[in-house]
Image (cartoon, rainbow over all chains, first blue to last red; front, side):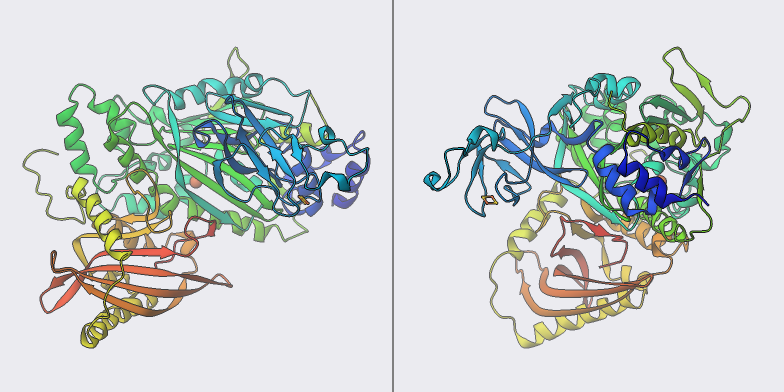
Length: 441
Length: 197
Ligand code: FES
Ligand SMILES: [Fe+2]
């Protein structure tokens, strides 16, 4: 057996000579990465903190001085717009004695007054003042006592990311080959405007956060993990959406693309043929028939396009470490502890379409959180239970590895393979390893 | 789909969920947040009896019988936004018209939903029942508090909240036009919400 405790302990003690490499191999990873408290604690510092993590969407900060609370790993943060509209992320941690300074989910505030002893901070982090300043000595320096900040915050077309790593590449370089896929997703909105709605499905499971990321690029599981949904979808005869995962997925038209930096995408669009096909294959939503008639009558030229964008985007884009774009949802992985995670499914509407399209998008976005994701999360929890077996040490991710003719690389370095290839896990664990080994740039 | 399609089977078609259907929800929300006079004891007793029967069907997992309590134009609604919010622009835990409710029951009974293997065992307590007969529509509105206890896979959970039922007259009795389930912590994180409320 791998002496996990010494690997972890040594790596923590001496980040310069880490030995995480023993735990991540070409075709497998060690169970301790999902079960060990100390691994989790390290991840919250080195993975969530030293690379770009998704923080929030700009539509959640609609005006000057808007704020929304969130997390960066386990750190509570407040993402803010300043009075000129610039984006910031401050730690939700008073510089005095650590109380959170903001206890609301979202709102508008130029400054935050800590409820404990009343220190007041601007929404950009500077300390405005502490009550009864004469109680402090001459060395009390307000300029040194601002809120801690996420030092780099950038937005790509509304998606706000942050990192504490000054040497990290630019956000655009980090997104790299994931960018065109994110563009495709955003540009389904006629004017590129995506709006995160107030209500979100917050789905908690008793398992490690990586189980959700593993699943984001898993084209192997649907015919099994989602059997109930596939059965349900054929209740009314013809099969709807996703049942194609059941036909020879190994040599089907669907592919997975390993995009670098731990990102990947499953492209389901080859299963659809032409305008209107995504809509036609969507499991039926409440109001579907009346809506389709209305759209076809009022917008005969544009109907197929409007109907298609009322259904899902048909790509599963995973951006390491915490962003999963699935359907029309912006899904965020929030680690709570080594064996507890919250997945937040942010529903979106879009600009530039008739209001009925957005209502239908809401009904579309209720389907998978109800009948799909719960079965996956049940399986995540059972994985976590299975991992209690200390004697069987490895989690396999070898499907597709060394299989002739599966993988090919294009000129940009993107590797494409059969959708059931576990290349998603193999590639993101290389990025995980790089970060855990203390890489900066 | 064409002009000849007969949409009357609402377990297959959803032609009736339109702007008026959503407007009704706003109207019901206004009524549910108003103060009501204390109902006649027989009316109250009859409403309680209806709720108790519905509760028992769910708790005994008799979902095929449960769904028969609903009208063809029903809605089983578990909002995320407390009180309901605006479902036109917000997602819900459940926004089930007759077709999706039929899907839900079918899904629960596939025996393949891993989130329901093992199946949830539930028992619910319903109290503070109030009744308003709406003379305009002929509907009977029933407001109540609930606590649903769930046991599944070795874990016990408790879900408090309030129900808003809109009942439509049906022969000598009533059917459910709307069942709105208002979880106390509806907008917060939940584990496995696949149980029936
Ligand atoms: S902890 Fe914030 S003012 Fe004391
Ligand atoms: Fe899945």
